[in-house]
Image 1 (cartoon, rainbow, N blue to C red):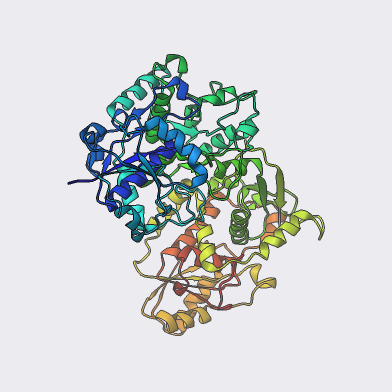
Image 2 (cartoon, helix red, strand yellow):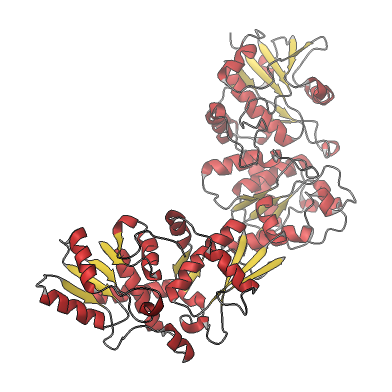
Length: 626
């Protein structure tokens, strides 16, 4: 004869739903059939709703049957219930008694039933089911199941603390049950009909769930909602949507919140046309159904922004928001909604945000870029927003390379938003007015922030050439008609040799190549001095070496002099910039690179290659950042 399990839930709908999913896991591992549950409306709306709602009133039973065996209470009405088993601790007796009294008549529980206490309150492994398995009742009535099957190792299921790990024992069971609980066509129809009133597309919404206090009448917004500022909450959502490229959703922010939120004192934004919401005046169903319709909308929305806690006035290390937990689980399992986020992860970035301005000067182009990569890392580490400016002071002119603006040449993956209210601004540049200038001191702090190669590669990828520049480079590479296999040599001349590096002739480069990979006969040379090509060809001829030289150097190039170009404001032309970046791309595509690590160009090429085995330095053997 089959045995059955009745789940008698407690607290609000989210907690009752979580408890039911846990009861389904218990039913599976105790070889019982789950009885269709009912849900009791939250205390704040109970007087405006029906006494209870059956699972089948809300959810698609066929979908649920695909995973779980289930019967309704009428199918087992002939079986007498002798015991009720309370799975919660004794201090919660008043809570469980209240919800028991609300459900006992529906489940036909007699007045003389015996109450028992389950000793094993938390079930963390399969062995922990033994006590429940040993109960011989034909119908096992579990009162208060909720947070008893340990899904999160912190013992708070659905915990939002990212440091908390999951208990792998029951995750597969839980996920299977999550995926078979879908709203039925009745809820879907009500949702679609009500969205028509506000001319809203369910698939083009950013839903914000705002879990306020149960009792918030005439209270301030800060008191009612996590000590958050209402304007900052709205601005943080708008800033986030801009940051992820979904600015069009700002006009489609859809608020779901308990009805009592409207009684908060002095609301100024979240009760206006800046946000969308179901029109209560045109919603003909009760408030419990309204809350389920809101959950259905949340499931289908493009982005879901959740609240950090069920207890908005208490700060806890481990917390969850139960109302949207099933929705969040469904969306996470689909792996489609990559932009879903918790408001706490974006709110603080608006309220306590530092703007870090990095000023590009006229030092060497790759010197600036390598230090900028350090600045990107530095800002990421300290949660600063990074903004790029060009230093326009005499002799420091950052327009030397970027006369049309930095953004024409590079894309920077930055969180900077001009609409943010930054509480602090830090300006960083390589040359200050004096040795104790804070601008220069911040620059020196960055220069001392050395990072390992793989970290530098990661942050280099946040700085990319614009599609416009990339397109020009691709066209020029085709015109060069490079061979399929070649090596790349970067041979620096010009002002680099005056104070930063020793002269290293082509003879040293070709000797190193012969040692490393002499079979490749094609060599592309990048240099700022055409004499390097003359020198190289002469050496190959004199030593009867069978190698072919490729280059992209103008015969008029006699070595780069940054200081001279700054004084006479000889800004890089677009073509000069593209040619420089072209040579870096040629290096990236080569079979091997020979360079010097004392040169910023050599160290940057290593980041493009992402593999130190494909590059050989003829001076410093060790790659370093900055």
